[in-house]
Image (spheres, one colour):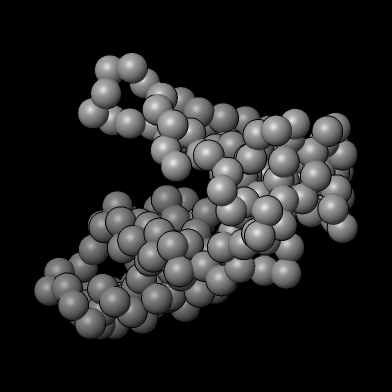
Amino acid sequence: MIDLEEFEIYFKRLCRRFGKKINPEQCEVYFDCLQNCKGDRLEEAIERIIRSEKYFPTPGEIERVYLEIKRKTELEKEECDHCEGGFVFFLRGDQVCANPCAHCNEKCICPLVAKVGDAIFWASRRSTEKYEGDPVFISDLNGMKRMEGATYNYPASRKGVKVIERDRDQKTGLQDKA
């Protein structure tokens, strides 16, 4: 999250580029709309707007560019030492599972997990926030709880495992894919 002082720096730059007088009340309105943004991504969004737009942007236009940058950054995410491409793969019984890594992700619409040795831990807490009606889980590496019956699934052990994948063309719902 960005603080007001840092936000004002970006907002002043935006105002200078578009020849607008800096209005403290307007700055507060923009800040209220964009305060949940990360500073580095917001700075990149504003720089992109400065280089490409003709008119002073609305908060919604800034947020749209911010979210494009955020999505692109998340898709290009490097894996950390605890996961593979942002996900922890594990076995739970005879089922192969994958959940987002709590080390790489701040929040997600499914529970985040962490790997410690071969053990898998729930490493998130449910937020009051919702995303399109779904609950949002926030990474919580301090409050981890061991997931019973789950063990780390080494990449080599996934060879030959059948993965159930949703077949969008079939009315039957789920279909085995080799």
